Image 1 (cartoon, rainbow, N blue to C red):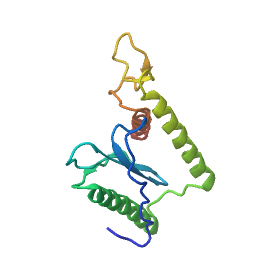
Image 2 (cartoon, rainbow, N blue to C red):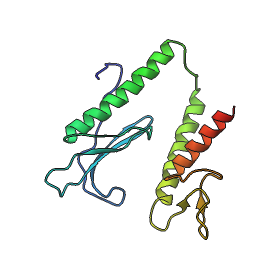
Image 3 (cartoon, rainbow, N blue to C red):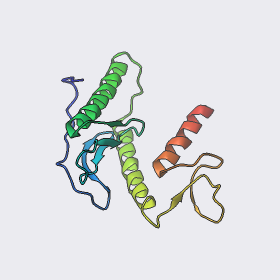
Image 4 (cartoon, rainbow, N blue to C red):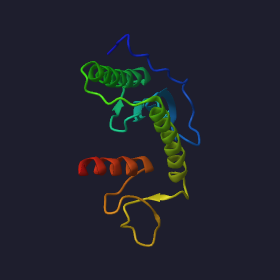
Length: 162
């Protein structure tokens, strides 16, 4: 899905596994978060997987790296175009510049906290049902895999209560 209103994703060069990613990978930063595509470079044939998206609710597998990038690009473009359509149709909420900057700063802090929490020996993220262990999570609630999941779930619960 190409749309001249949407700037194409800019991907990093392929990277080797490192402290952050266990597999070969490429990333693309967006104003909403990043895309991460990983693959097992030591395998002769491995399908690259979209492991991280700005929205956390979409993934995909490409037959090759270009295919995975195309899937990510199409999803990104679709979401941006849909948002533009909602603005044109008047179905949007206006966020002032100061609020947008606050949200970006919050997202950066969340990313840093999540990185700390999800490393070995970090804070355990759970729903409180694991006896003898400490950590963060929703009470009562379901098991969460990341700090961002816990916060997103809490925000969803708040919006459902309204």
